[in-house]
Length: 293
Image (cartoon, rainbow, N blue to C red):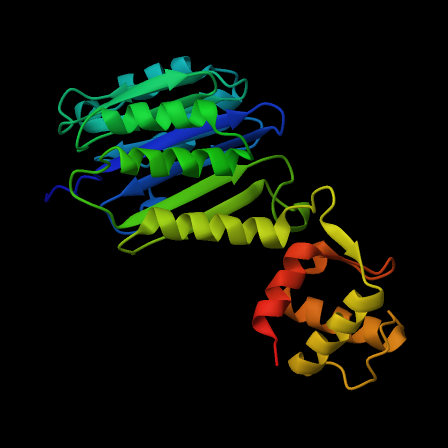
């Protein structure tokens, strides 16, 4: 039987105890790495399985942790039962933020991993161990959502040398209880760049878009649609083809209806309060760039 190609990969698995999120960010010289390496379940943990990846390690590891095993206990059991363990690289974080990492002694250099508080960073076929060190340091120092910290760590790893064979794909997976669309599952963020010359940069852009569409507005972000701003909104709506009324500077019924239609068409409902006449500054900037005379 022909051997599957090795995933020359670096990844970081992490947990945020405040937001109750678990996630993985990964980059590889491999097509669609996000379909192979990352596995996570809210309230249970997260697993990255790479090198000559055994994809069963992902769901099996989550099942073990769901039964109460720690990250290290689950990893020990997974490795013991894996005939190809010498070729594997695995990172695990459990429900409480406990971590573990494993690198088989036949993984291609540079290969290895590092664990810290609430994270495990690892890689194989890397330029050097500086990639893993940079991921660990950045995850510890950067603020923001778990997704931001994971992708920032990935970028730092690439900056320190990254994958010896180059770049091709990257992904970030973050889960939290009822974090998925409309709260029907735990998949808060599942973004993938399957084939790109600069996959981490593209992944960061996708994370920023995800925040724009789905992250609740921060303090001071929402502004009242009144006066000169209301007149500007009416002009934007006219350029966009949603409004043909007068430039009154009032958030009247016609303006409200037109703006609701535009917001709905662009999927910005999370950043618009129709009843109160409030809209996100970020969304306004998007509309300004998209609709101008």
